[in-house]
Length: 74
Image 1: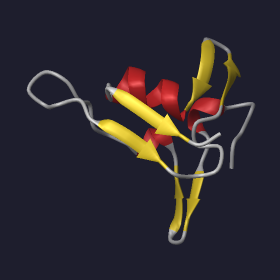
Image 2: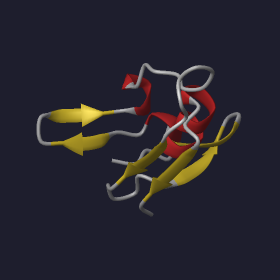
Image 3: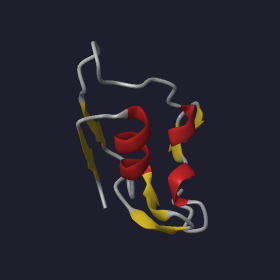
Image 4: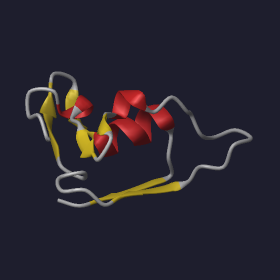
């Protein structure tokens, strides 16, 4: 459910509802190892220009959750 108007908050539809990058409330780094995060969902790796630069799952999780690597489908 990629939203070009709000790419950094695009939803992924699951069987029990939807999940957005803003639903992830963890920050890695410091004492917590920085994981590789793989999302196998259509357009999960898609990005689009937003008001402040590129937006999408990858940008949001790398900058805010501080994952080390993000792999997502285009």
